Image (cartoon, rainbow, N blue to C red; front, side, top):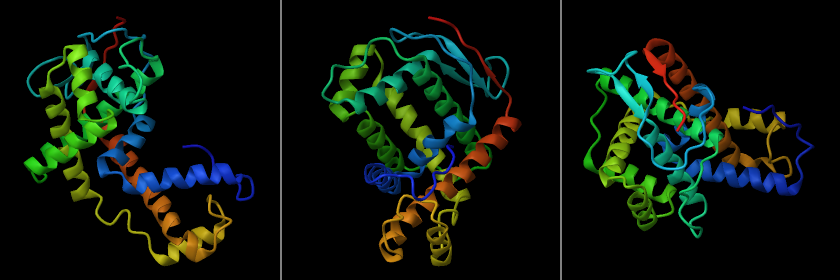
Length: 251
């Protein structure tokens, strides 16, 4: 995470941007918040640019070689997820079928690895099994991230990918959400006293607001920071506990 900025330095525009980001985060699902920090915890080597949907083993979780009980991450999984993100960022543009920046591919692999770690732990401790409505909600989030259901369907057709792949992604994200619901309860509850302490410290983008005006956006910011710290600890612990192997092949 970047270093904190002094209270007096942000201009009006940067403060508005920060407020917009915080408000958007406050509306995000638990899984979406998790994805914001997964890449900061899982670090992998650079991956070559990818032009098309390519099958190839890039990671193993749960063992050093493929086999029963080992989760396999394919390069096609990573590139599909990356293209979904790009499709949603520019929904009026042509489908993102060209070369992918290596940094985006790397960050997407990190996110997928973080999800797999958490999903495996959720299965091990037998968290509540997600219901059909939970999976449907996560699928809706994936569609929204891709620019809508129609745009996602068009992307899948262009890549020769099956709709069942999105169902599998949604099911895993629902399992991750269930794990966090069971293990992070209370983490994002920020007391009025803590909000006031943070406000008086001045290390936030709301310095031109009164305490009453800043109270709720500052509470959202503090809750997000607390969630990030908790998720980072979980992923770091699981990285050390679960056998995994990163295999990168140029396409």
